[in-house]
Image (cartoon, rainbow, N blue to C red; front, side):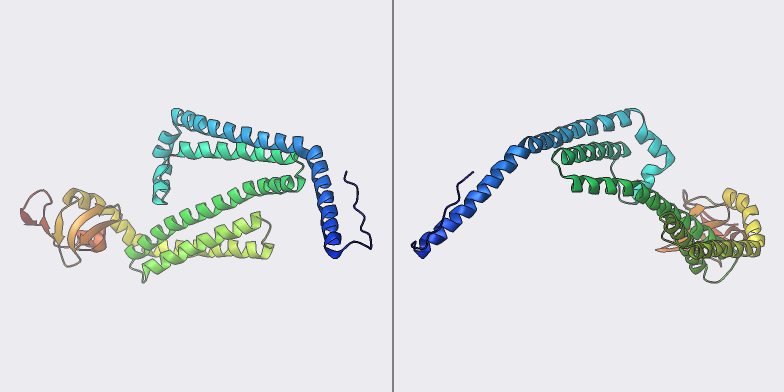
Length: 298
């Protein structure tokens, strides 16, 4: 430890300033020396732990990806429709690669936590533990919201189609309302899971879904007659028209692009017309076959 430098009255002002700075610098150097002597080994061990964890995580990331690919994870994702869903949402990497990155993140997290404990950074370690406790709950919430969005799209499609076949006004608006209601209910469930929503809010969400179910039931009941006629005419439409045929009638004009159980999709230029099978079956249709130039009356 440096001996404190005494300042006498007969010294000049520059000498007094120099001696004061020298005493401060000596104290800083002494404190730094003690700190390094006490914690240098822990710091080096912490850095070494972090370095080993990073190397191990990098190696196991590639190994886990190859193992998942060899076990057929990518094939299962293709057959289950997961890859199609990922590509639709601009996710183009194989699921096996993402599994490898998950392994990488877990190992790197564990090594970082161990390094912080070794270096005495207990506040940082506690923060990392809190983040780790939040991640599973956040994953469940994201899954709930994703399911809500997916089910909302399905409900929108079914509702719009049923309203269109039943001849109801603004079918797209009804489908959009149905989709929003499903997403709102999923949000209510997520808030209740996080314990951020009161019982009254949750009951309101259930009431919304029950009202939606009753409304859909009435809608389907109203559209049941026309829908049944369209379904019964599907075999006739399927056997009469083929994909690619050009048809012209009072109800529509264009090329057949899809024949579904209840409706036929007709494209003319950039416009797509969805005609109920019952309507198309009742028309006198002029047909130009997609694989020939002959025309006829049906």
